[in-house]
Image (cartoon, rainbow, N blue to C red; front, side):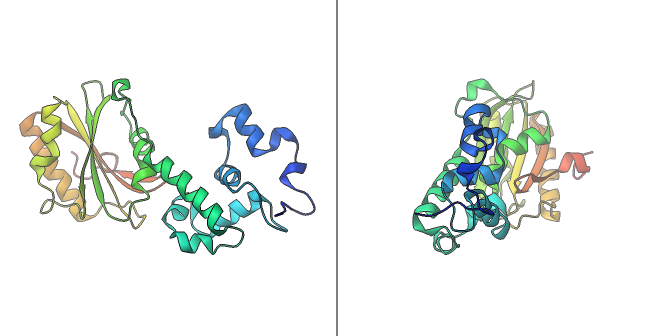
Length: 235
């Protein structure tokens, strides 16, 4: 049986209130670190390395949760202490997490800050290998009334028709929209094409009386740039 050892003790030797599973039960999943959450999926460690230490090593060597998600199955299996069973559990759990989205649009989540927008979309967008353009539809109170996954590919005015950007916004009588797209490289710095595309969208929105409230570029978990905050394309 695989052992969970760290300088002579296992996770089972830790005080009950400090163990990941017990902490999750008492305080909820948000109270756990990424390493602790991953350790729960791993269940056990290997000789000389507890499940938490194994999780910490994977997060370090594979560049965090997003890096693990992007790691091919065969490569993840080759990581010391993983194997096919654990790799399957990890990738299945991450895939479920990345597919999470607001299921009940009647709740109309408030989207009045770049942080709130990024928090809602970054998990899924950060794991994609190609650029994707999403449109958040907002009402007059900056509450989301729709989410359109519009386009996959290079984001610029020559590839994405501006009319398509506003098609669902017009149908749903949205007061404003927020553009969101990802940079698979992990660098959220807006490109010249991103800025030009945003300006074109803002101008079209004025003609339709639908404000382009912001444009966010997502690089990874916790890595994003708001063009409005940076004063790019917005005046």
